[in-house]
Structures are given as structure tokens and as C-alpha cells.
Image (cartoon, rainbow, N blue to C red; front, side, top):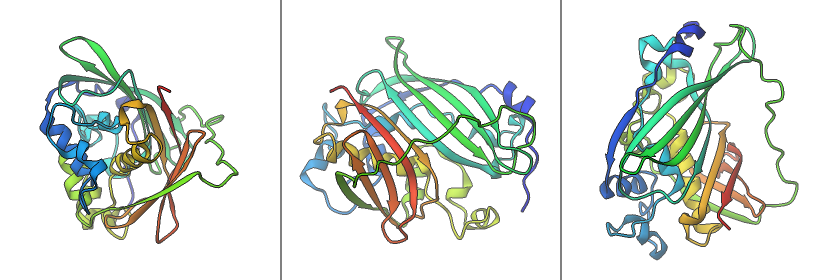
Length: 287
């Protein structure tokens, strides 16, 4: 099935809605559960993520669902055929540990719109700031790229110089695995991701996939959890940044393998298919 042409002027003028949300301990608890923490067996180190108490642990990746504006690309005024949209890359920069509850305001804007050429993809960059509405202090800055498949050729900025990082030559220092659930995409969708590509087999098939694919941000959350436990000694509050490029789809029920290098790189693959799905992610710490 072909996609409708991109209207770059409509897209650049589109105003992404500002969202205000009263984020609660229950929302934090649900996010942790939605990425699969505690879904197989409740290990002692996982209790801090799933017990509702004053020091409920938060992950940097949770910033991607707080005061989320939803799948705004499906709005007719966006100038985008929503069927062509795939999450390409996500980064989160924290100004401090995320609170488990707060009044959150998200303010999003469209950044660069890159053009791979006629018949090829376009790349949309979206930038979001999360603000604590009570203190007016910024909590996090998010940068998201969306691949608009076969929507290039409109004369936008090209991709020259936009080269990915180089994979370390040495073997990974840590390798960990995590089995996703067959219903993982259905659960994660309750965080506000209404893209039917993750839920409807017919729409997934029309987009060229054998079935619904797992949300990239769910994979991102799983990788963040594994990094917090394996590379940060179970102290997610030390993490200040994480970013990952989504290079291939994950199907709910697959086991993910995360390779971690101590120099701040990680890579996510499917354990059975040996397919890299999260290419050359990076993470940073307070020290």
C-alpha cells in the first residue's frame, strides 16, 4: 500500500499540543509494570520499581510517557500520512532524577525535517521539554526522530554529516537478556501510544510487517531498566542521559539481548534472530 505525499509546510506549521498531567505514584508503578518489570519473576532488586511507597524507583525512560501528546501525526493538519511513521531515534537528557509524582507540563516543537531524496525517507525531529508545573523547573529534555517512510523528495535539508556512532571493536563488558510478553504491546499502549501499527494485525500487514510490532519506546524502557540494574548497580537515579537508534522491529514475545560497554555504549538485539534492533545507544551518569 502506498503512502500519501508529505506536506512539509503543513508539518512545519503544526502546533503540537501542550499537555498538562497530574503524574501519580500509580502512573509510575504502571509504567514500570508496562515495560515488563516483575512479569516473569519478582527478583529482590525489582521490588523498588513495583512497590508503591515513598521511594518508588523511577527510570529516565519514563520521561517519554509523562504528559505525552499522543500520536499527533494522525491529525489531518499534520501534513503526514500516519501509516508511514516509524520511531527512528530517542534521547532523554535529565536535569535530575525524575520524581515519582508531580504536575507535569510537556512543551513540544518541531525541529529539523531532513530529506533522503525522491522515493526515499524523510526524518522528522521533535523536541520536548518536561516542566514541573509547581516549581517551573525543567525536569528533562527529549529529542525524538520519526522516520517518514518514502516521504522524501520535497527539497528539505539533507542528511550530510548525520552519521551514526561507530560500534566499539572490543567485546561487550556485560550482556543481559529480557523476555518480552506476547501481550507487551497491548499493555504498553496504555501509556498513551495509540499508533495502530502496534495493535492491529491488518494495519501492520498493510504496512509490510508480519504482525504488530512492539513500540520502540517499550524496547527503550526495557534497555534503560537493564542498564540501570547491570551498569549502574541498581541505582537508576544516577543516570542522566540515554539515547538509542531503532534499527529493526521487535515482535511481542521475543527475547531481547542487551550488550553493554563500560565506555557508555550499548546495543539491543533479538536473542533468537540475532537482529540488531537498537543500534549504538549511549548512556551517561552523574559519576
